[in-house]
Image (cartoon, rainbow over all chains, first blue to last red; front, side):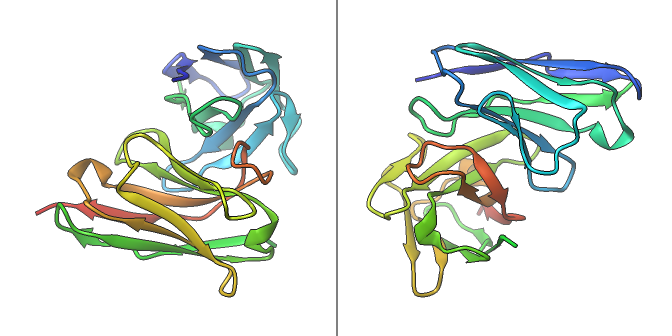
Length: 108
Length: 121
């Protein structure tokens, strides 16, 4: 079974700073990786699919890259509304919707 | 506009059953695959089950295989999750999720707001 590992577990940042989140897979995913943002008390929302394609309406400060087993999500300049939990999810290998454990981006 | 509205969450005793519903609007369930994803209190997201666009292929996480059944009613444009032999560890918010493609192996492009299932005596 595939294992998805996100790091760090928590990222303490200040508004305006650049944040980089990592997601590592135990098997080759090609580009079949998505990123989601979840704010407290809300459902997750899609940020990125196909490893680097921003979903409709997602601000340009969110960018992502990677392929195979190593992926990253970058927020170029953190805005107050970006403090949230971020999950990666693979959709290439069984089980079809395996998530990482999440990275919490908190205000420093 | 795509809307997914879950219902059916409740407090149930261990060993009991529950059926969750997800009423879809703004698209037809036949046009894409659908999933259920859950989130235990204070924990991360866990994929539970998926149904292909044709409704012929189902997938289940090992933790629910044999106890949960995913299905849909095209006439009502509604997705279901029948949950039997419930355990305390099934306690979670259950999200209905629309996938970006038809196979069941795809990202989630729309989410419902979730319904809470609590399993306790």
